[in-house]
Image (cartoon, rainbow, N blue to C red; front, side, top):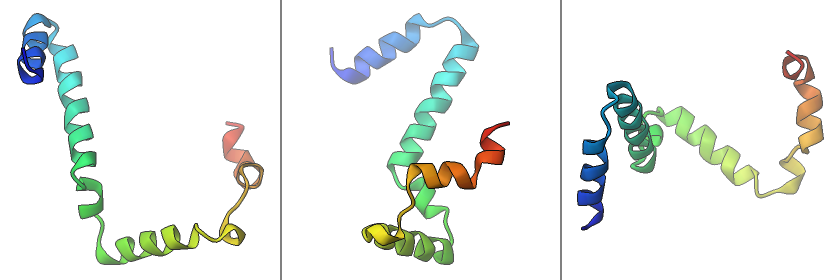
Length: 79
């Protein structure tokens, strides 16, 4: 049996409709993320900002420590 046949067989053995819907939504989301769906939904300004942030992340002087971020957002983290 190949993976598609195994997958179909597994689906056929699940009788819980809600569980199947949940699995289906999860697989759809994973597939969308893998195929660049999130990137494709960004506008050009958002893409450029993300690329700038990515490139800046290679310079350690631009990075914040975990402790700094926790301190900056501690009022929300305590909720």
